[in-house]
Image (cartoon, rainbow, N blue to C red; front, side):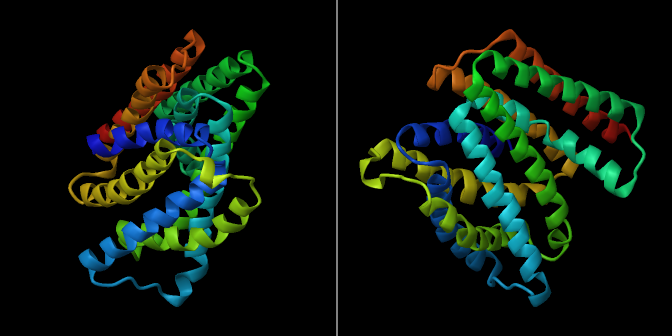
Length: 282
């Protein structure tokens, strides 16, 4: 779980580098999942001996691939292209809190006081990060809003894919979602002007790392790890993602940290710890 979440944190760095090297957002997503599908499907067939999809699950699986991959990466990559990787990862770190709030609205579950306090702290943290982006220029605030859109889309994906998780393994779901997303990624990618021949080797290497390690290998390891620990325990490791991105963004991309970004990130990460510790005691 440490390796998986550190690599997912570094995926923001790799994505930014690939786009700086010449990839457009959706072209990067398309090639990432072409390669990821070529890895995930064989792994699934080898480990599970089959890759079946029930007829009644075709539409839900397409919708899960559409929201969890196509729409999510549309917002995330367009956001990363315009804002810092640090801002992006810290805003996305609030997804567990957004999910909890959405569940409270949809299922009318009652939130405990610590969960309410954690939600308020998290939203204040996101607000500070957005405000820090506005101080850095219009492009940065637009990028931050794209990332916020990715967070909302991911919460929607969680609700859509919830019933599927009881019918398919994590590896099987990821394989089908990758395959179905290729159909919706292609028309978006071809509308972008991307000179693939001009992309240097390190841009292609970054894309390969995203596909082979961050998508295929890490999802395989993540699925296996979930069998060995509770969802609550695994959720704690998510905090490694923004911390890794923050260190990588400064060290590898030369990004700068403002005190508002650091404070906002600390509030978001602290709110997740608060809510998770409350769940553990319950």
